[in-house]
Structure formats: structure tokens, C-alpha cells
Image 1 (cartoon, rainbow, N blue to C red):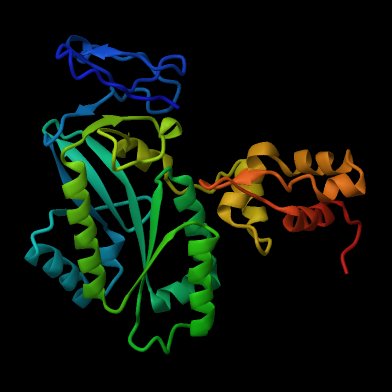
Image 2 (image 1 turned 180 degrees about the vertical axis):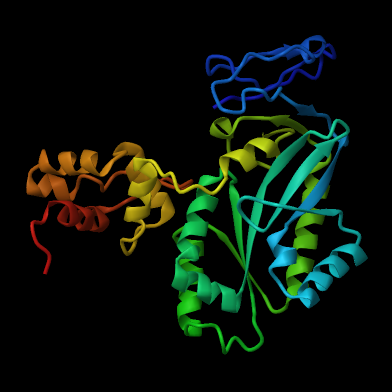
Length: 329
């Protein structure tokens, strides 16, 4: 991780995030126009960016699917509510999520704020669970590099025709919050959903506009904190590029997907396991090299998620039996 420091007593110097041999570099104001050392990521052509306080605007992005895939009435209400309460928004194609917020300066450079919203009407929520989109979308959201993931669930009338029992939908929503660490929000109507987004937009504008923003590669982002004067954000171009939907999964991604099919395995737990054992073969070999007693405890102390919780002995034993049993009853 890179850190940004600043000396407010020296006006001729500002410190920015830049990538050079995975170390922090200092960039003077006079040198900001020079080409930065090329990073190792795919976004090597992007110059480091610095947004001074109150030099940028904050804009709510609305995914095109939110305006083309829903009824004209809902589309009209989206535009009407956001317009009547004077929320600045743009309709764009988002590779993941339905709503997001960008900061844009006078040069048109855009940095993405660490909040993204996935909106589901209750009937669509049920459909997504049945056809597998629910798991796939959560997987991509967890991989996109955005810290605050919001799952917004909107009621559909009396929620009587949702494809699945209401109790099952509420359980799935609870699991999304507790196991996958999403922020869960329920609303009664589409208008309520737009008002919630408007409140978030106002909150972000009030708390971010007076900060100094710097661009930072996805892999070096640190945990977002409103109290910091300098905030590192991913470039919107890099976000869009890294979150493209693809069917060319590597072994790690496929292993994560397989682990997620096990009851009790959340995205954070799967990521914690795969960080230590990148492939199924690695975990299988580790289990085989242990005695039965040690094997059952092998994964117990692996930490996962922002709270650094542990996998625990029960899940460790479950995975041990899954990988080592010759038959299943």
C-alpha cells in the first residue's frame, strides 16, 4: 500500500500517489506535467491525478440498464425525482452495479468514489436467485475494488408475485449483509429508492468536496476514511476496464466460484482461503500432508474480511472432508 503525506508549511511541494517499483514517490508541482514512471498495471498510460479541494464536481452515474430495462413509468420517475431535487446525474454504461458516483475536475478526469449500488426490485431479486445472476453479480461486485457495496431492494407491490417465498428472499438478503458484508437497504417504492440515492449524493458532496483527491491503482487502494484530508480513489477508466464481464476465468476465480457453492462460505471467506491456497490442488496437497486431526484444523486460523475474522474449526473440518473423502453418503 502507498500512503500520501503532505507538508502544509511548504507551498512549493505536494505529495502524490504514484507507482514506481512499488514504492511511494514525491512529485513537486513543477513536475506534475512530466510523465510519471510507468506502473506495472494495464492502466500504465494514466498519469497520476490530483484534485484540489472544491475544484471538482460530484456526479451520480445511472447505469443505462436502469433506463432501458425498466418500464417507461419507472424511467420517468427516475429522471423526475433526480431533476426536481437538483441532483446532478448522468446516464452511462456501468460494467458492474447500477449506480455510482464520480468526481470530475475541469480537465474532465474522473475518479470513482468508493460507493456503488446494486438495485433490485423484489420480483427481479427472486429471478436473479433462481437463474444464478445473484451469485455472479455479488462475485463481480466484491472483485471490483470498491469498498462500500450497497444492495438496494425495492418492494414490488405487496411482494406477492416474486417467484420465491418472501421468507427465502429476506434470508438471502440477510446473508448478503452478514456474510458478504454488503450494506443492505430496503425501500417501499421506486421513488423512495431515488430519494435514498439523492440523500447519499448530498452526503458525499458535503463530506468530499473539501478534500484533496489523488488517483491510485486498484491494487494499492487503502480503506476509505472520511476523516482523512487526502483521499486516494481509483480512476473511473481503470474501474470500467477491470470490471468488464468475462467468461475467461483463471484457476483462482474458478476456485472461488466453486467454494461459494458450499453452504456457509461467503465471498470474503472464499477470498481468504484462495489467498493462501490459490488452486484446488494446493489445498488438496496441504490436506493430504497433514494427519486427520491437523487436517481438520488446517484452515481454522485463516483470516478473512475487513474485520479479520477466522474461518473457524467447523468450516475447516467441512472442507477437509470434502477434499479428502473417497465417497460421500
